[in-house]
Image 1: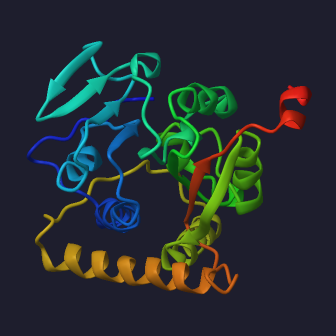
Image 2 (image 1 turned 180 degrees about the vertical axis):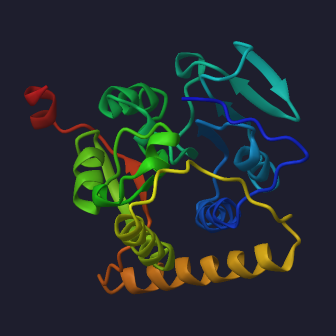
Length: 250
């Protein structure tokens, strides 16, 4: 996956800010002792883990130039194989990562080799293949997922699903509207633009707040097995003992 570098002149999109905060709120409830952010990019999410996880924080990204270095108390690695074996109070974060991997099954196996039984895996992915567009091509996505596809993949890796639901329903319907307008107007793909406002700007803060509310509504309804469609999909999983039947099948 590519390392996405941020400079002081670039602004975080409210989607990125909201996703980070919503997932952090979930992670905090699990009292982890260590964590590994896979596909960590510029450490934006990993740096936020430092405030409440007492043990080591790892950031893994193939885009890093150095094989191993420590930056701002984060252990940065450019190869999953160099990630040390974690304990059963660990968490691995894959924030919109596996859609970038051609063979995500092999990729997940490499990660799970480092995680013991009881360890947690937090996964987010873009949702619904029919929404695949030039946006995904620009971001080098191989696919988008529906809930059944993602859970099938997760269960095949000896993971137990503790929580799963779509989120950002508001953006889901906005994306559909955008795709329909492009078809009507036969617009040419324009790629992806940057965000023009700072994190403290009122427009950023307003959209950030709306997305946080959106996430909470989707999560609340999921408790009653009501799954609103969303632009993204979350799964919180725990590694479990491999059954004798699974071992025989492999």
